[in-house]
Image (cartoon, rainbow, N blue to C red; front, side):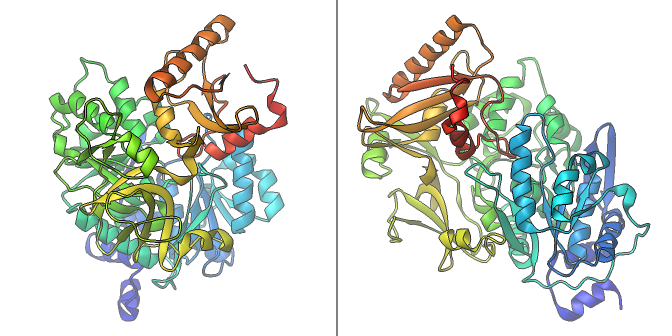
Length: 564
């Protein structure tokens, strides 16, 4: 009995089944092209299976049982794909973790990874020779066997899998922006429902071609730009996140060269491309039908600037799309309508802060806030807005965004208390704030980022955005916090920012710039402004400022000597 016949007999829809179907019908079709260093690897479905087989056999030789955890920590390249799929074919549960980055604080990075290793209790680590050496202390502490590509058995035959649709397929670790990384348990059934529902919303077909620079340890990179195309037969071309960081325009080169039709990236990357591209640069971007803004709050002004900048290069405004997504729902919750620019609402900022109502206004004298639609829910997902007591709120009332449907994760791996807090009665409580209007979702902020200053609510990311181009601070390297002041009897605004300046007079000038900009944009005056050298603020693996870790570092007794 062939492997595919085995799956058809038991009618189990799983990741191995989908790959085996592709292997039977289109074995030589390109599924992924991966740029690694100066080498380009073209991977067909046949090559994917052959590359995954040694990793699957390595799991069997390590005597892993179904559901045992395997950590995959490799640079972006073909072996990362082979290790991930090989573990799944073996019935193990892979967890892709980020390799070390020169842009992250090493002590914070390894502390976070040690916590993850302790929790998931992996027995096997697929990694590189260099990382194997770097990880020796963690491996010894947790009895983990490290396997590099050089250690793999010589085989190209996949073992017969024993996997069921409700089994956990993999762990998707959160970036740690709001605390310790959590391992989100994604079942085969939830993953495949997401893949099919999202493909339907995007009108995806095999004529499409995706390109991506996103890391596979992040849900947008792994789901939207890897599993979605591979499982649906759409070719994808990947470059390293580090290559994009060094030369952002490499993404535009890739789009032109491959005639790509779909691209995903977070809002900051749109802004980065706007800033990096010179007036005399030119690419043909006419092939792109969906350039999707996701993973962090989508800003209308960013997409407007992006549309203006790249329209002369053939980019259609209707190609700029938005998506609301998270690992706890595998990926996409809502998606804007393909081919139509998402709607922007201008709402009364005072009503938003004071009354929790998204009231549209045309008053040119009123303080306003522009909010971009994230579209409507994908098939079979439901979105509600709830108040603190769990009551459903009507349209235009601000509350917590809650999601229900077959894409929901099984919870957080070995963290039942945290799972119970947010997965309740069939709903995932996202901790994001927003409102619904005519079925469309608008995201306004996050519960955990709400600062109460002078008795009024303020979104931390709005305050940080107000300082986005303040002279003297490193772009994107600023955070707004609150701190109780006994002399005021309430919380006061504290701003932390990074700068490359060290001259005392220049630092005082930067503080004045921050104070003036904050007052002009928000009406608030920071009670304190602290400036730090580059890389002082702690970044998560997704590249965002880790609010909780940075706040903890700022409150530490050892900080006093560092304050400027």
